[in-house]
Image (tube, rainbow, N blue to C red; front, side, top):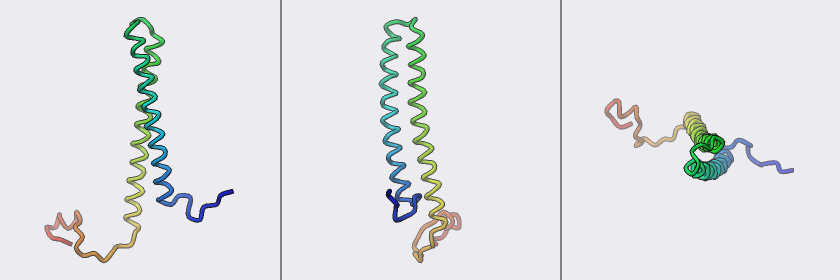
Length: 108
């Protein structure tokens, strides 16, 4: 049994997993769009085919669901990065430009 030397939820491991999920979602989206095109061509040839219309709608929903998953993953990654930035020790770089210094009109 594999036991990792670092945390299961280290940022590097989470980023790698997120990348894999995003790639899988991209493949799922492409397959769903291919299915949509297939059923769309069936509907174009026979506008009365209600089963094809239903499947066409399902394919669009699958495509949107896979896109929504990518957005949720990116949102979680941004939140993770923000948390890391808040908890990371401040560096002694005094030439750093921040939003707070811009509001005050001077460089930090």
